[in-house]
Every structure is written in structure tokens, then in C-alpha cells.
Length: 227
Image (cartoon, rainbow, N blue to C red; front, side, top):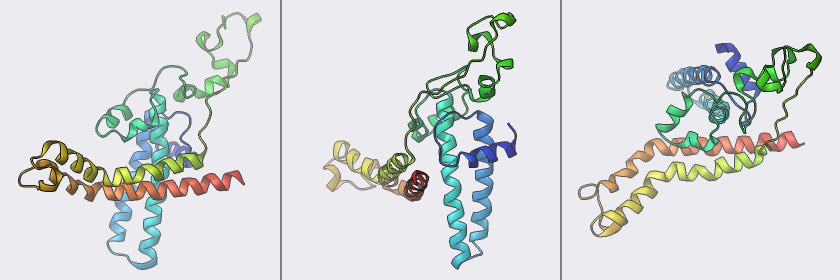
């Protein structure tokens, strides 16, 4: 898959987290995503008002397909899409080759066309000796996994967003209460390292806010598609 194909594929599957995505599809689109964010970030520093707001909307809009392709990338290695939320480990998984052949999320992403093209099917796919023309037949792969409605996906994103945004604060409170002398009430940054954890929210609050906006957009898209 080329850079352009990855972009067109991800926008065609804009908020679709079902199925699988290859490593090139994900990493090419991730490169596009970074380019867009850096470019818009540079433009926003010099533009305000309606133009600045429009650029912010574009940034948020590009987040939805990157979330969707990240989930599909997890599916390609036969993992739940929730694994993409695990820091550091998610990078390892995103770089892991996909499972060979079909898994519970669908056919192998890199060879998906072979399931629809009898001339390219292997013995493993068809289950018979393809060298014998008398046994030639068409085998169609049917994905039986039930798709999660977009509205439900958006609701999950919206529900998780507060945990993402205020995760450090929650962990700091629990950690201070359990491990700091005097509990959370007496803890401070000088006598308890847990009390310093809320400083990390300068990173997690924007992430949680973006996830909430993405969830709302996904729910709207789901509602429109049902009409």
C-alpha cells in the first residue's frame, strides 16, 4: 500500500473500526496525521478568530480516522482495539506484523482480495487441491463478527474521555492515600512523589477532550447513517 492509498483508505473508512489494517496503512496515515497536525499547529500560531477555529476543527476531524485505523491495526494482530490505549506497549503492537490468514476480525488485510478472487486462492483458503481443474470452485469468505454500531463506539469514547483526562489526578489520589504518610490529605510534592502526578494532566486533559469530541462526532455520524 502506498502513501496515497493509505490516506484514501483511511478516509473511506473514516470512523470504521471494524476489520483489519496493515502496518503500511497505519504508519503511512500516521505520517500524514503528524504532518497535518504540525502544519496546522504552525498556522494556528499566526491565525485567530474563525480561521483559527476552522483549523482546530480540522485537527479534531483528522483524529477520528487515526483512532479508527489504530483499532483496525490492533485487529490485524488479533488484539482488541482497547490495547491501543496502553502506553508504550501499544507502539510495540502497532509495529507487530499481522496474523497470517484470517482471524476473528476478518481476512488477512494484506491478502483480502484473494478471498474474492478464485484465481489467487491457495489450498489453505479453499480446502481442496487447486491444481485439479475438476475441483475448481469459488469460495467466499463471510465475516461473521458482529459490527459494533458507531453510536455505541462514540458513547464508549465519550465515557472513557474523563478517565483519560483526569487519570493522573485519580491515580495520585489513590496512590497518596495508600502509600503516603498521612494519606492524601497530608501528601504534597515534597514528601510524596504520588502528589506530583497531577502535573501530567497538562498532557492528558487535551487528549481526553479530543477523545470526547471524537466520540460526539462518531455518535453523530452513526445517527446520520441510520437515517
